[in-house]
Image (cartoon, rainbow, N blue to C red; front, side, top):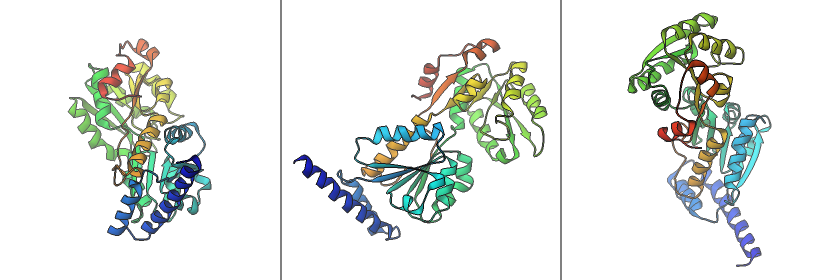
Length: 329
């Protein structure tokens, strides 16, 4: 077939695909709609529009988009980038799938009507479980998520691998995050680690709870909690860590650079990679629907060598820790 013929064929299939997909959406999720969807996605000539909504133009969100764009370049699917502040009902409704990057993007989508499936990425598990999933679906949309945070079981395994002499793991949580305590405790106990939980009460200053958690534990496991870890508290938190000679395990590369001994995290590019794998699975017909919301499949370990020397720790190399955890870049 000539180049022109292939181009015309692609356009014809794309137009037919959009028509079928829009018809399916009006069938309110019935069996006939599912059949149409399966037939549509099974066609290798189908070209879909995927709208990527970014919370803002900051680097992590742009990196997710760029990773997705690089992986979808040769797929024939169209990737459209919009920002949460400029999001319109039409921009979301004209797509076959919408990817919300960050909580602000997901919140913007939650306030809009529509039936287009939504995949939220770089969102905290607590937000998704407490309100995000319900608000995004609104009883009409299919929704899923790739969380920002790492599973506690993976974090506990890293502690055991990297710091075999640690026995008591400190956890400092604000009142808003207390619901995580049982899950953290179960994960630590699976690695024969004892949890030392200290609460930061509403209105309480951080200094005293911080002293308590370091005095009673061998290390601090950082949990994403804006009342505990923020730009105003980081310096005093790491200074206290050095004074007690107890390390901090963080949840981002930036925390490692700021003074954590090591961190377990997924890069925006890794999140983008997983999102594209899910999207390709659905659009190719290999998967009937988006997988259930989950933690990141790909992750990295970062180590602050200077902190390790200062505190007297000798750790395995980053790539070896990643390998033993089953991760990768």
